[in-house]
Every structure is written in C-alpha cells, then in structure tokens.
Image (spheres, rainbow, N blue to C red):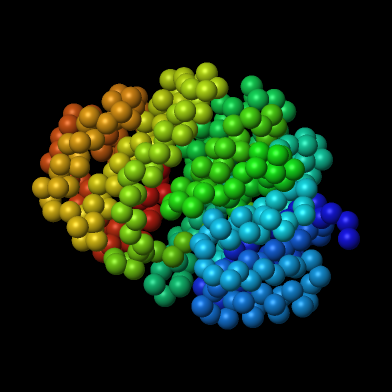
Length: 355
C-alpha cells in the first residue's frame, strides 16, 4: 500500500454519541488520500466496538486498542507511532470537520510546501439540554510563508487569537515532526501549546488559511461539573514563559510581543483568581488575597504588567486593578466572575468570546 498523504490520529474516550460523526467527517472528506487511526484509550462505553465497526467499512481505518487508559497525550503518541502519512492531523473525537477542509489544506501545500498548515475554527457552545446556544468564528488572515523571517512575527499573533495551541486545526509535516522527535508531554491543560511551540521553533514555512472548517464542540460547564485543575496558574505561567523564551531566542522580543503576552497574562491571572474561589481549591478568602499579593512579586507580573494594552473593557479594568495592586478589587472581581460563570454559564461564555 502506498503511503497516504495525511494521517489523522483520533484519540477515543467516552464519546459514544459523537464518534460516528467525527469519523465520518474525516472519511467523507473530498480529499481521499488519508488514513484514520482510532486510538481506543480503554473507553468505558461502546466506543471500542464502534471503532471496529467503522474499520470494517473502510480500509483506510486503523484501530488501536490500548491496554490501559493513559490519557490524551499518550493516546496521541501511540497513534503517531503507527501513522504513515506525509502530513499528520490530531483530531478530537467529539468534534467534526467540514468535508472540504483537507482538500483546501492540500491545495495550499501544492502552492507552498509548508511544514505546518493552520486553519480557523468555530466554537460552538451547547447548554445543559445539548442545544446549541451560541457560536463564534475564530480565524486569521491568509498567508503562505516560505521563510523564518516572514512567519515568526505571526506566531505570537496566532497565540493571541488562541489558534496556536490547538492541535486539531493543524497539518504537521510528519517527516519533520519525526526528525524533531517530538512527543506530547504528560501534562494537564498545556500539552498542546508546548507541542506547538517546540514544532514552530525552527520551521521555515507556514500556511495560514482564512477558513473555519473545524467545529469545536464546547459543553457549557455548570458549577461542580467542570474540571478543577489545582495547578492552573502555574501551568499557564509556564505557557507564557515558553512563548517569551521563544521570542527572546529569535531576538524578536518587541513591544508588540510584550503587549500581546501582557494581555494574555492578565486573562490567565484573572482566570486563576476566579478559580481560587472554587471550594475545591481549599483556599480561604484570606489565602486568596495572599495569592493575589504574591503575584506582585512574580517575574511575569513585573515583566509584563506595564505593557497591557487592549480594547477589551474587562481586561483593561482587571489589568488596572492588578497594576495598581488593588488586592480587594482583584479578589472581588474574581469572585464576581466565578459567580457569573457558575450561575449564568451561557452569559459567561458569550462575554468570554469578546477577548
């Protein structure tokens, strides 16, 4: 069998209602030279059986049943190990892709054989009744870059638009990825952005497509049904630090980069402050205020806080509280955001879109 042009690695866990749709959105692509690798991560439902059923009807499908649940990063790494494509896409099994997406990506590669192709997405928010409540397009102007000098200023702008970290809006040159010996780290929340930063560090070509074919299905969190990550703050400060290190290495740590990183910093710090209000944090109000006070002595605060510049009224207000070390105002703002997020999650989702 000849080498497929695109391998699609799709980790599968607990997505029985959505798996058929996700797989069909790949197998029915107008571009046909693909293989689909379904990685059953010991799913507790009938996903394993569904994977086998899908494979029976299409010879382009491989199924890998893992012996024990190892999480998303491990599933992607295991799927990557048996992939044969010239390019590789990592897709979630509860989302779906417009049927012409891969053809458009390949068309761009014919024009400019890039090491990375990126496209936009549509965030689709569903309420507790699984009804679509609101949606938003996240996109970026089209560019076909063939040099490091051209593409590097755009990496931070893609991160600003949230398009850098996601894995399912990218085609990676698989030979180059193997050459770099990249694998996903076993870390919560930021495994995607760490992978992306490592990949783009030395690439000399990039295609950005002004299309939004990926449908990112987001279930709105209600109170304690949302996942709580105790080291949320530390993980996202690492994310910002890695981007900063990248631009310093490139000798492109400009005022624009500082501004973007500063705005991102305020967003994640604010999110951390409101998450501390969750009972699962185990923090008293006094401890939450001490957390805020400790921010003022942190390296990233001192490095970035004076560079915040944004059109977002919310970010501008919160950055003002932080910059002026208004601890009580920061605490109360975080508490207010926490209440809105848990009592009015649809409203919170809509406000969050205006980033």
